[in-house]
Image (cartoon, rainbow, N blue to C red; front, top):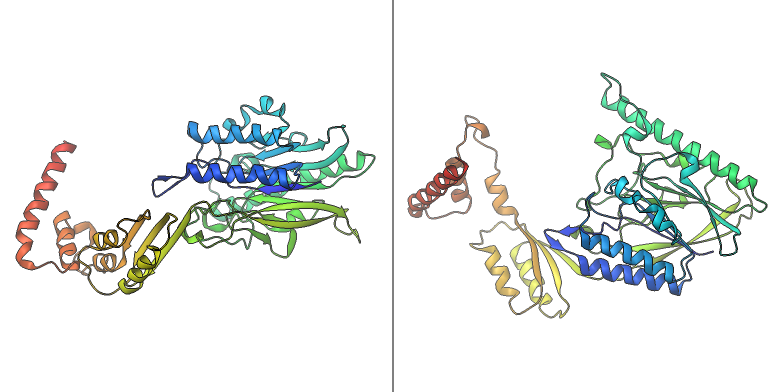
Length: 413
């Protein structure tokens, strides 16, 4: 049996306001081709199917068209769990209809009997047990108490998560033992494990404040032959557990992931040579995902940025850019200078940050004047100083700025 593990699609996500529909369409088409080429019988989607709890009609269309096409492509079963970005009720709403396509959706926490699935082949022979545990919200695993500290809250959450997985594992093991021939047990989860790697702008956030809710991977050491995780966008094993993995997001969620190789996990099982932890051994192959939209982050002084932009002019493929200027010299109009270098190309700057200007504006305030004491005009004057505007021009600029403030005040009134 060939099993494919993916997660964190985040359908409908924007990048600095730019829709990414074409990228999502290209990825899902690639995924369909991979299912056919690799003869995948089971597809596991480990949460965060959508980027928001209220996905657009366009994002929903991508989702449902893919599920229909995957069933026609020969995928016998698709198992989807809810993530922290998903609406549990939205995912669960069509589950009875989707079951006709052998699409099994567990959007919110349920009983072990509802989360543990026995998947059979076309002849009805048991092939795989899947423990489809969705993202566990605090209300799913604990009850709050008056006056508890953040640490108590986190510890109670961790205890509840561990007990939930223990109950599911116990149920799955009993189901496995009831079969004439044992089949592998796969766990699914959407959680943040201890030691998991993230990137600064990948959009991943702690599920409990301060990282106190990071789950120890020992909870997977019971009966699971493979654990398909979602939530972290960097493809990775969990510690030294080769059978516990994050597939990562299929698209870079931010420019910090631009050079990261995205992938999905193809899993095959064989009997364990020396059974000690489980009966089966997972053979995992990471399949690289093509780049559907090139992203580049340029960070440095003006000579570096200028040289990089001149080089990019040779690229015919459109590139989305994030430019972070860190030089020490004043550039009168950085955006205009960048636009001139990109003229007649299809490259686009989605974000431009002038850190020199930010440093000047955000310099420590004078001790005798706090931020609360400063007026909007005071801040505007600091901007004029930071940009080294000729002081002869200050009165006219300040007058214009005051007129803008007056107009804004009128609108508010």
